[in-house]
Amino acid sequence: MANDTKRLKYSLIFPVLFLVIIWVIKIFEIELNLDFSFLGIYPLKVKGLIGILTAPLVHADLNHLISNSVPFLILGVALFYFYPKVAYKVFIFIYLITNFWVWVSARSAYHIGASGIVYGLASFIFFSGLIRKNTRLTAISLLTIFLYGGLIWGVFPLQQKISFEAHLFGGIAGLVMAVYYKNYDLEIKKQKEFNNNSPNINCTDNTSQIKYFYNEEDDD
Image 1 (cartoon, rainbow, N blue to C red):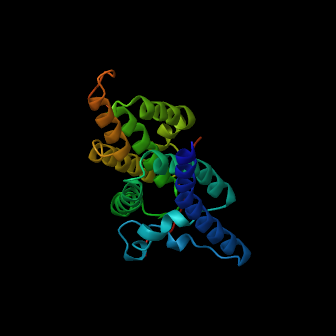
Image 2: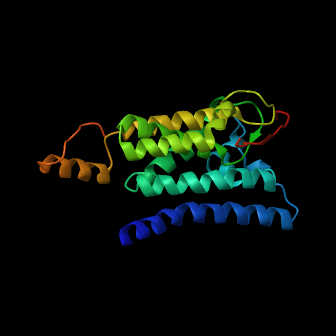
């Protein structure tokens, strides 16, 4: 129990810190009456390259920020709790590759918001549970579907001012990471080793709509 509590506290650190950063940025933007949309991703424009690093930190308004904050916290904690050895690698890959793909092939507009990351985390957690065929992780996958099953509609171009490209690319990035790390998890490996060494245990080899807002701008 003590180890679980410690692990949970560790799992909260990065997601909470990330949320603090994006909330401080939004509050700063509001208080000074500024517009940070120029820090978003503008596809195939040099001016939009900075967005690969900054776009997830910027949101259109408080509703946009709140809609991303809640699922990011839940999925972020799940990532660091169940996959502590690869969590940072998975997060960084999803963060960078999703934004890069948006810059390469999305519509000509400023794309901002963290929902691409949310889709990536949801995809990774869901597919990891299925691929590993681990009861505990599969349960987390099913919970992910139950809580965020509506995310699937976000990958289709149903609303003009929602970046379905970021959602789609985030989901693909999460799937790529789930496949890449399908055999890598220290906790599960230890569980397998224990099962292999125990004569009395059967051993098995199986182990809301999120907005990504963009502001249109004429090409320069």
